[in-house]
Length: 266
Picture 1 (cartoon, rainbow, N blue to C red):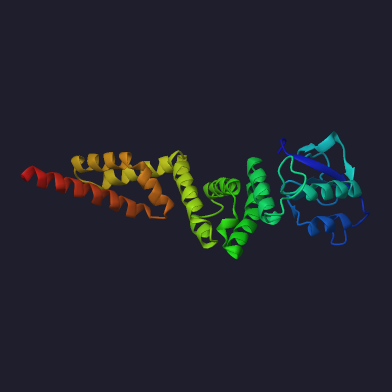
Picture 2: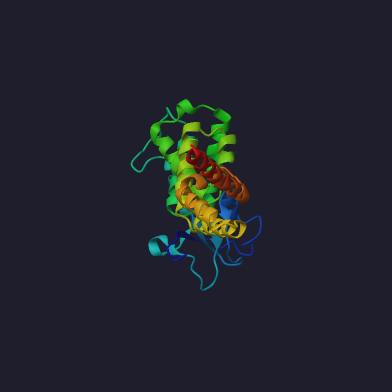
């Protein structure tokens, strides 16, 4: 929380601090800002224009670093935010939009990338939905340049790994197939090095141990399990059930043993 940076906006409208006819709150709602935790009844607000959230102030509590170290007025904030909107979605030194590309699409990609980099996952998820809607509505993959493709893979790899989206949801939104495969591979790599997957491997080992009477078979199953972690991670990503993966391990090893026995007879 201490690392967050906000505009501290002071606006005292008398008794209308937390009701519908508060002009400042009306402006924030119009601009689609979301209210996070706060304390109603104080005439100051912590506003984050990057992820479009605000928190009503609370006596003695700071939600982060105030930009400039001082509060600003409603009218001053409005002036600043209108300038910000002018450049929203453009590159760092890009002063004018590229008319050959849809600004809304490009802008959302840039915004979501920044939100993820700043660890604002919930806000990133909200804006990522607009990207998926655009892909689904246009279903035109030829209009996506290489830089945007790389950004799309980065954005949705992160959000899938965070559990905000599934591969199925991306597929339903007409996410480009080649990019979807890249997201899938990134999810597999992420899963392989996660504590969750280590725990699942341990559970599989225990299940195989207690469900296998022969030490020989258990050792064969366990060795297969450890050798084929990436294939197992792929099955998890594809949504295959734990017990079905166990059955797959046993079937594959049993086939190997049967083949070895048949070759031994020859």
